[in-house]
Each structure stands twice: as C-alpha cells, then as structure tokens.
Length: 243
Image (tube, rainbow, N blue to C red; front, side):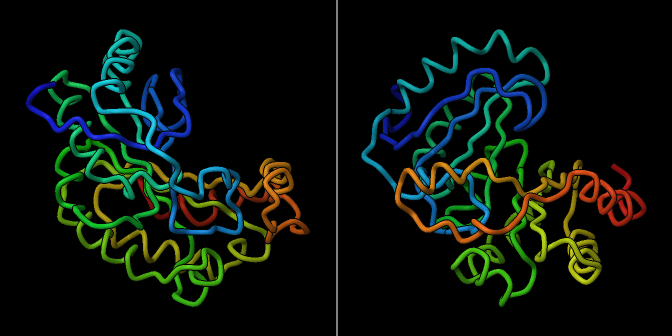
C-alpha cells in the first residue's frame, strides 16, 4: 500500500455478498454523497457527504478477506450515493485492488466532479443509471441539469468498457411509448452494452423519507406494476438489442 495515497472516504455501508450489482459474488461499497435528488431515490440517507470513516488501506484489507468468494466472475462494485463524488479515493482504491487482479464495477449516474478518464481506465464494468433523456424531464426528475451526465457519457464512449444499463421505470414518467422509443434510440448510440435492466419503481424508501423528515416527492405515486414493466422490456428492448 505504500505506493498509494492513503486517502479517506465517507462510506455508508458495505455489502459483502452482493449478487445483483455486477457479475458473480461481489463486495458492494455504498459511498455517501450525491448531487442528484432523484424523486424515486430509495436511499435518501446517502444524499449528504458525511465525515470520512475509512481509508484506502482499511478498505483494501476488508475486501481481501472476501476475495475467495469472488472466484472467476465476482469482484467489487462502487455504488452509492454517487461514488464519483469521491473520485480521488476511488482512483487510489482501484489501483490497489487491480494489483490483486480484482474485477471492478462502477455503478453511477455519471454526475461526478471530473477525472472520468482516470477512473474509467481502472474499472472493468460501468453500470450506468439512466434518469431521463430530455433536459426538461431530467431536471424535473433529479433537480440537476443534464450537462455533467452528458460529459461523463462522452468520456465513457472513448473507453472500451463493458456497459450495463439500468432504467428505473416510474408510472406516468417512463411507461409510455414516447419515452421508450427515445430510450431505444439513445441506447443505440452507446457502445458495448452487455445488459439492460428495467427496475420497477417501488415504495421501499417511503419509511426512510418519513424518518429523516425529508419531503417524499413520489409519496402518492403507485408502485410500477412488474408485469407491465416486463412487457415494456419485451416490446422495446428485446427486439432492438442482442443481449
């Protein structure tokens, strides 16, 4: 570790046996802090960047204990919150983990603070969260302009990284032909897509909003019907992408 800056980061939690945030069995690190305020977010406790509570050296030591479970397909996933807000830490952590040949995935909304080339050189997989595809719809849904997301995607296109796409489907926002056709057209501009996931909007975060005293923008929005969500996937994604 003496070759790396032993920086500190604010981590909310660590999942040692993750099965959905990338291939294989993974250690998922949930970083605090996010510039977006997605109306459908179910992790509002990670909105704010808290005091640093771990170092690169400490985190590498924890991850190495889980490495036998990774086998050939597993690894580490950076999630949040938005991990790109702590990009200097990610870069140093990634350098250390790559020394041990550990597969790295970055789960991101693409709204960070720069150094995108540096971190994308180090990770093996990007899991990109799509919020909305018009500037007006994006701003209304996440309370942030689309500019940084577009900047990240342009850098991402230059890197030959495996790409997973995640789209939360919110009733009344995404579950219509106009948005779905726009999504298909947009995804066709992105290289190396290996997987596309539709995630039905759910209400599991409602209790957190109430407990934290944070206004819940979609409190009165019903959950997305799983069958309808699957039908949208079958109609729009399956015919257009060989994945």
